[in-house]
Length: 604
Image 1 (cartoon, rainbow, N blue to C red):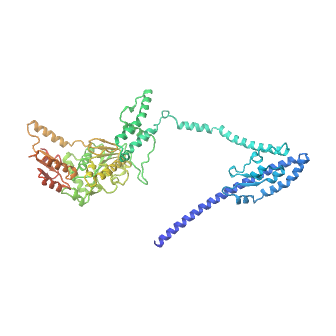
Image 2: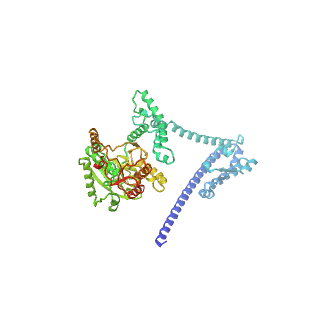
Image 3: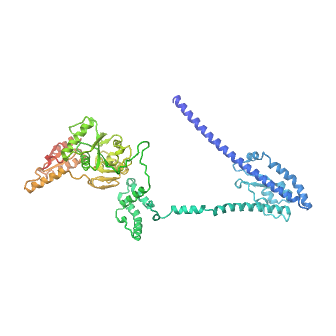
């Protein structure tokens, strides 16, 4: 450890000790001040008691009985001594010196008592020895019964007068307390509290605002939001749906009864519980007022585009010339959305370095994003037959050999300006967000839709320790899609069942395929053979695309498929291994380079 580090440690230790000492000192000062206050209150009590005794002596002097005068003469020296001792300025100091954590103030009144009562009870001497104790918890209050007990001293006039005055003093104290609280009870404070409480707890139908979510709806929403976590614990999704349905059914019945009784038409007659719950949550959120959308400093959040054209950002995980679904389908989606001229469209695709391009793209590389953009637009225009007006942007990506996928490098969302952040379509949302560490998509965009193309769990299961990897990836996919998407569209039931998802093929059909189908139908009407070339298998040449199953199936039924020929189109990292396995098993497969399904060579 160097000198600078030692100095820093010493400085921190000294600062800690100083701070601790200041706290102890402040606490001690507070305690001493409290004890001083208590000592002063006791001093005031002694003064009050002295005043009462003085009144008592005055009344005794006015009496004509000789015995009483003699008593007063005997009592005066004792009273003077008591006054001198307990009225001295040092009384506070003496009390503080004897005041411990559990100490009591002990005042020796035996001399006065002996002057008043000559015969002392033996039991009283044994219990206290003429000592009256003022407990700290009573704050120095001494009641009549505590001072004199239940003993009847006789009809002696001075004692009777003292008793009467002490009783009157206690009664005045009780009356003063009753007057204070009686005034409080008679005030309108309680009425105001009652009226405020009624306003808070009034029934929802008395208010024109949207009623808040009740406990059953909150619990149903919590169960539905906890789907990935419950799935991690082994609770199936259909069980969670049943729990949500049972929680919402009671409230649904109550609202239906209210609407029927009021003669209203309720929209809650729909059987979709999830849609009803979404509608309730959305209405409550809308009725709560302002929602902060801004960032920490200058990012003022989502732009209000209610009076302008909508902005659609399509973010995907691949781009041409990689002939994969996440490169081709988003390109067509951008083209046809832009063709309607109802929204501004931006397609965001990955840009790879030269070495990664050589691994992914077949026999072509690009020196700049502009060069790749020209390639993509020419390919698109050749297939759709029109020039699409949309923007193409690039984000940095890195090809992962282990995952055989392009992984975004950095925050992908920052390549869409905040003023254009309206609707986001995330092609493969789980893939895009495996390593996403930027701003939350649903915070930046008004609406986020995820389109699921691939069942990555089946890919991962084929790898080493695939079952364990698939287990973790399954829950990661659940978490990221729930966090970053408002809605998830699965292209088929073969994909992973994800939160907020429905099965819907949103790709549509390329018009070129329809033209090919019309031509085939015409050829059949003319008596020509429509499909003369047999069958073909097209897909990226990696084992996960089904090449292992294809080779095993053909090898198993090799004798039954004598003379059957199959053309295989595809490029990929496993091309050499796939072709070697087919050659070793002597399968009748014709391997060719990858091409599009609409290519002329495939029509037959």
